[in-house]
Amino acid sequence: MLQRPFGSGWHDSLQFHAFCEGRAFAVRVFWTCSLWHHSAWVYDGSVAELHNSDEPLSQSAAPYADLRGAGFALSAPDEAVSIRVGDDLSLTLIPRHTMYGPSPIGPGLHHPDMAAEVRHRGRRLRGLAYCKRYDFRGEPIRYWGYRFVHGTLDDQSRSLWTAQATFGFGNHSYFRFIDAAGVVREALDRDSCHRDDHCYGVVDGEDYDVELEELGVWDTVLRSDAMDSMLRQRFCRMTVHSGKGSEQGYAINEFCSGTLG
Image 1 (cartoon, rainbow, N blue to C red):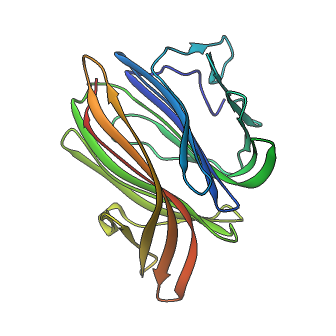
Image 2 (spheres, one colour; image 1 turned 90 degrees about the horizontal axis):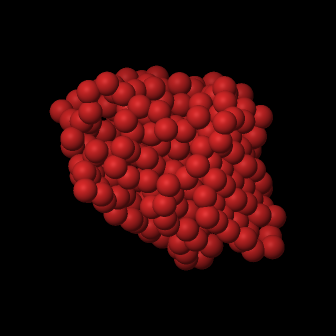
Image 3 (spheres, rainbow, N blue to C red; image 1 turned 120 degrees about the vertical axis):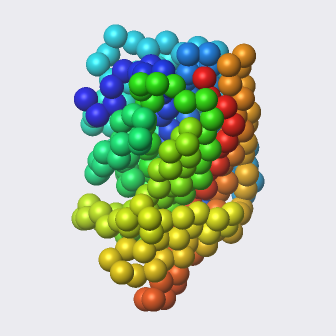
């Protein structure tokens, strides 16, 4: 199975977001030995939080991530992911391409260009979605921080995802493009970096500057007796600059920093 049962290692995380007609829909499940978190928010002209809970979810006996809780359900067999948040939001997400991108302390999985169908308050929308799943194993780290961007062009012909992270004292960075045929092109880790409203990569000898214009912000504190981290996600208008010109699209820009445990 692509999505093993949830609760692996000493920290497990599963997140999705979808871009549909200038709107964004974001869902996340986050777990450590001391904390549960699951949340959902939307951008539809402005940001609205639909769900934010620290109540434990129940993993079924299925051989894949299959979680249930009050007002929240997520099931991720290989053929399609289904998510329900209350009565106002449901998502069906179909993986097109899968990339395994291990972090320094555990396995990682990315679906950078999922087909998305979203039902939100009586409307049916179609678009492109993203999934990231990772878990941390081995010796636990105490401190962490990262910046992450996933975006797609307006015509959804190409998507990118990039991160710069510090796990303990180890650095982890990447900058990747994927086209409609599933061809991935990426920078060397030394050729990828992030700033507040930009991220940069050198791919096949060409410089890329991804510029972000903030449209809306959602954030939450992940806090327990053993950890304290701030998580923020921004929905942004994205402009990708290169020697070939500029292209526009939408992106999610995510930050997190603090302690983990």
